[in-house]
Structures are given as structure tokens and as C-alpha cells.
Amino acid sequence: MREFFKKNNAAVIVALFAAFLAVFAVLDAVIPDRERSELENRELAKSPALTFDTLISGRFSAKYEEYINDQFILRDFWIDVKSRAESLLGKTENNGIVYGRDGYMFERYVSADSRRISNNTKFIGQFCEKYGVHTTLAIVPNSYMILADKLPRGFENLDQRPLIGEIYSSLEGADGLDLFDALSARSDEYIYYRTDHHYTTLGAYAVYCEYMRSIGREPVSLDTLTAHEVGGFYGTHFSKTKLFSAVPDVITWYEIPGRSVEINGEPADGIYDLEQFGERDKYAAFLHGNNSLTVIRAEEPAETPSRILLIKDSFGNELAPFLACSFDEVWIVDLRYPEIPVSSFMEETVFDEALILYNFMNFAEDANVINITR
Image (tube, rainbow, N blue to C red):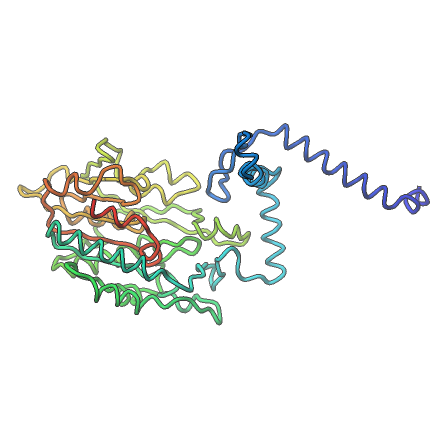
């Protein structure tokens, strides 16, 4: 037998490799396609339809390659193997995410779209001129700007502080809220998630306190609210890296009793989708995810209800419950979902305040801010 393998070494290797491919081809054909990857927190590609146009244009081959990559047998296993191998090789960055200290991950971000920033700032000025409500723009610095002690040695990213200062100085009709000091003062606390790009609920609370004081009102104390913790949260940075040694995050949420909620005009069951805390994308539990228009109302409002308009990206989802403690009505708009235009309710609804809240990276990239004028 040994002599046989010596004489037919190449043929044996080819045969084993062919058998390996055949087994995997059969398994790929037999095992049903998956609709979603919980590990990567995204929908997986489906088998594309073959037509003459897609074949000639090359779209079919591109989509089929994406489909094969997404539906490859034991995909999650191979992703884990790749992550472990890269770790053994000392790799400290993957898919634009840099590994920091104590399990923190940071996004590589070296430049911003100055034209987009300028346009978005102008759109906010147009909103203020059109509706006249007292408006505050709050741009949340991303975690690498605040958590300096967690950054890897030699890490260099875009300095957001001067750019946020320029946005505020060029802003017309609205106040700019500087959040650097408020967040930096708590940088030794758990104010940003390790595996996600958002701030934590405690970070959102720090922003809420700074905002309330800026408009001359006292924030609610956390001691008066009942807290709940949900572990096992792996966020957007983890979804990009699939780092096998990632430290899971803990989400804290607070009970806000006596409130009713409507999403796009339909009643919803509370401020949080509690079932979502049991799913992979736990952050989507806040406000039931991102929606065009969400309204939180006090069930026993004041005779003249206080009312705030929050125009936000997903950073506003953790902030909104705190605002509901301080206002009888919180109207929440996500301009990425323009099914219900801002103009449809601004003319007939009186707001005491308007708060526009974005994280810097999203403000610098979001092409939907123009919807604030529509």
C-alpha cells in the first residue's frame, strides 16, 4: 500500500480533492439556503434569476458569486476559523475595524465629505427658517474621539472636534450643543459599546442631561427609574469582524411607565420591543427599530402638553425614552424613512423644542437630511 501511494501520490491527492468537492457540492445542493446570518446580523443573498439580460450584462455572474459566498456550507464555521487564524498571525484590523484595548473596537475613519456636511448644515438652516421652532443640533462624537485610553498605540483617525465646531459656527437659526466635555467627563464609565458603533444607554443619558440643561430644564434622575440589563449583545463592529474573542456588550434599558406609543399612526406595545432583546439585533428593541414617525405620549399629560420634536439617526433611539420623562409628547422622525414627510405635521403641531441628533459619521455621510425640508 505504501508503494502504491508513493507511485500514485499526485493521483491520490487529485482524487481526494475531487471527492472533497463532490461531497460539498452535494451538501450545498441538499441543504436549504439560509435567509439570514445571525453571526453577521444580515440577510444572505438568494439564488438570482437567470435571464438573457442579466447573463449578457454580467449581473448574473456577480450576483451568483455573492449567492455562492453567502450560502457556502458551514459558512459560520469557516468565518470562525478565519478569525482565529488571523488572531494567531497578530492581525489587529479587519474590514475597517481596528481592535483596541479591553475588547473595544473602533472604525477606521480618516476623511469626511465636506460637501455633504455643508449641504446637511444648510438643510437644517432651511428647516429652522421655515418653521421657527427653537432648534438644537447635537452631533455626537464617535467613540474613538472620547475613549482615548482604549485606542491601540499609533491609532490615527480624523479629528472630529474642529469639524463639529465648524458645523456649529456656520449653523443658521439653531443652537449647536457641544457634547465633548459631557462625554469626556464620563470616559472611564461604560458610555460606548465595545462591539457596536452606538453609545450605551449611559452615554445617551449623558447627552440627554447636557441637552436638558442647555434649554434650562432639569433632567430626570436615573435613580428614579427602574433599570434592566440584557447581556450577549454583539453589535455592528462585531458583524464586520466576526472576532472569535469579542467581549459581548450589555444593554441597559429603563422602564418609562404611563406612556402610549404610535408608530406611523399605528399603536405599538410600549417604547421597547422586548422580544427583540432575545434576538441577535438587540439594539432594534429601542423604539421598535427605525421608523418614519414614532410618537410617545404621556397617558396623563399636563393641561397644555409639552412637546418636543426629535429628528435623529439611530443614536436617538436610546435617547428618546429619557426625553419621554421630561416631555408629555415626543415626536420622533427618522429622515431615512420619508414615508411620513415632516411638512405633513409641522404646520398643525406646536412644538416647544426641536432636537436634531446625529453621530458625526452619519451626519457627514447621510444623503437623507434633505428630507427635513420636505
